[in-house]
Length: 186
Image 1 (cartoon, rainbow, N blue to C red):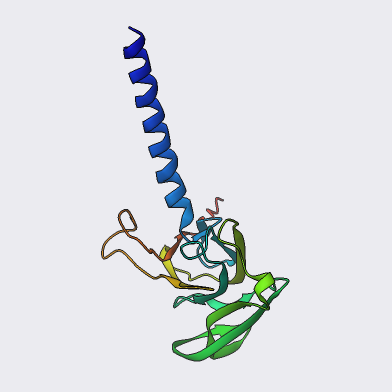
Image 2 (image 1 turned 30 degrees about the vertical axis):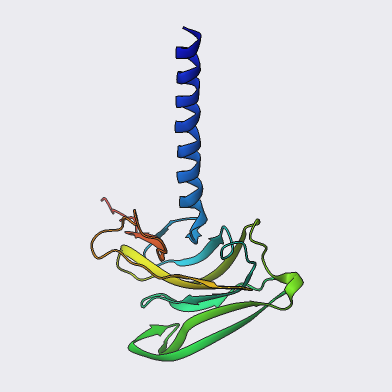
């Protein structure tokens, strides 16, 4: 009887540790702290970095701004420098009465010194804002995480759907929801 109880205790502990490991691995990806947003709105997107590269500290993060995300502006971060890269847009858009033909396509945060790098055993968040597309749907954001040794290229996107199950380095997913409709009754 005692042996049977011990077997069950070990079985439950094994399942618990397995669940904790799978939850940790899901949280270890670069993800949005708020994974849903409303189409056509200005949105602060916050990427959570859960670890470095195989024990090495994160020294830079490069975010590829997805098509349709307009006017991206990075949030300053103490101890990190920010650079942006603009490019000509395939599809210009209007903003505040002006036609925008060039826009930010890349955001880069770089640790100003080794002391400012993000240690592997800590997490941090990197934020940017801009206007979301008017059309609802998945918005995939590719992130290149560079560390003192190595890098993680978070750029895998599923061929169909939004499940990243089984992907080693999935891009961050922002689920853009339809804007609420306002009915007008007389």
